[in-house]
Length: 91
Image (cartoon, rainbow, N blue to C red; front, side, top):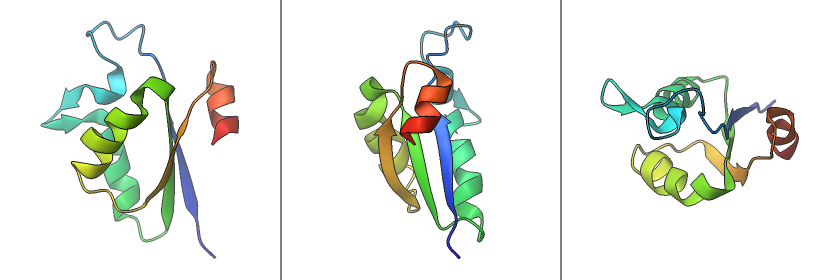
């Protein structure tokens, strides 16, 4: 059986107040989202990852997260919805 992880990271980060979305803020030298993806990338239980991000962040995520940090298990990057439940549904 193959297991695909669904990572929903389409939030706007309005409460974070750092000038950029929380998932793209650097922590210990890399974006918070990259720390999350690392854990799934390393897991032998996860075969692929479907990543949900804001429509406006899809290119940035591909270039600055997936390609830059060399994540190989990302099967697809899809746009999120207005609310979290919409983003989960999109995934």
